[in-house]
Length: 135
Image (cartoon, rainbow, N blue to C red; front, side, top):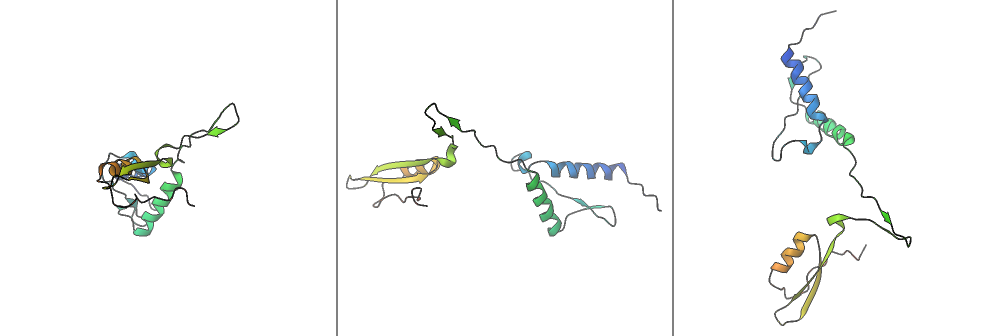
């Protein structure tokens, strides 16, 4: 059996690569790119992963990611329950007046879309609904 010796630098690089893979994707600084490396099975040297290896690593990383937190529902004294959905569950109704002064009502999904609809000049037709009442 051949006795292999690895340099301390290679061992440190391998540990850092494994630690980086264990971090969630958002753990890095905003806008900062990361480097993914793998240890070659034959040579033992660090190298860039093949596309298949990178896909496997990303799938493994997603599988290890924590599930998104779900807000607890609250039961009221009358037995009904409510749940805070946050922005994703919000539908904004927007009322504007057209050039003739008639009210134009529409719905938008999200605060940014609602603000944009309010700040734009009134359209000639109704604001396009996003279909929250249709399944």
